[in-house]
Image 1 (cartoon, rainbow over the protein chains, first blue to last red):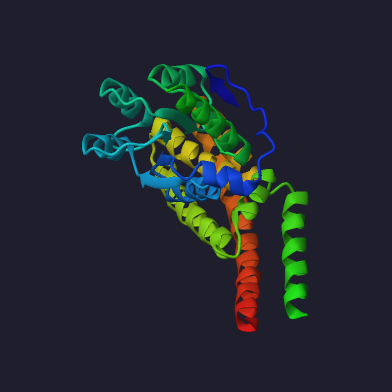
Image 2 (cartoon, one colour; image 1 turned 90 degrees about the vertical axis):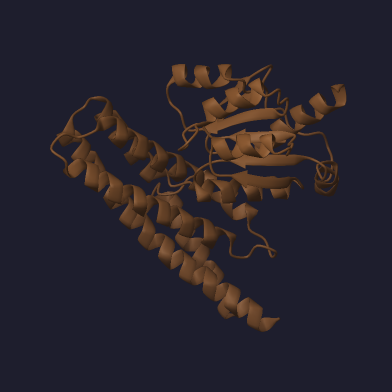
Length: 149
Length: 148
């Protein structure tokens, strides 16, 4: 399930895998999730696309990274995490003026909870599990956004 | 020859797990991520999954042993297990988690206990199959390394 601004899951144009990896070499991604398994999984998915990946175990770690001057093109944010959850972290990051694309990735069932998470400042929301099609879509949108700026 | 036979055995085991509904397509996605530069990726993810699942099952056991069950804590743990089950492609375990969440929403301890027993059964069955799968995979990797 995908929610967000003009969301669609159209396939990539006819680029070779090598072209896709090369185009993504300069994109930095932050994976924020308290599950070591999910962090490892998403890290591998993203590296297959040629992305540079850093991980954080909770929302506070993610926010602290930005406080210390780190920057990322894309943040994959889980919702339920200890210390600081994804919704709070997203609000905090937007309040700080962070304009990175933030994509919520969670297994939330409740439409109200999903809505609240989106309203915290997400660009898109995906239901777990993340798939390679989801990542292709995210990268397409990220490249469109970067081309506009 | 031995490697080919082991690969067939591995493929048949995985197919059986798909046929029984234990795994879904998400597991295929996981396998597709493994390559020669990360030959132990699936093994590592399964190990992390099992560690996490066992931690959660221990917590669920503890919380369900209390006279007054904290259903919101229960729900939180099941939510975590559902998320990781979905992400690894553990289809039946994910469905068992959904049942426990529904029982937890109804604040019915007896139904929660029944649903929890299903989770535990599904997890034990899955873990056994995963252990066999990983043993075969490690043997394949070892033989392939010896060949090089």
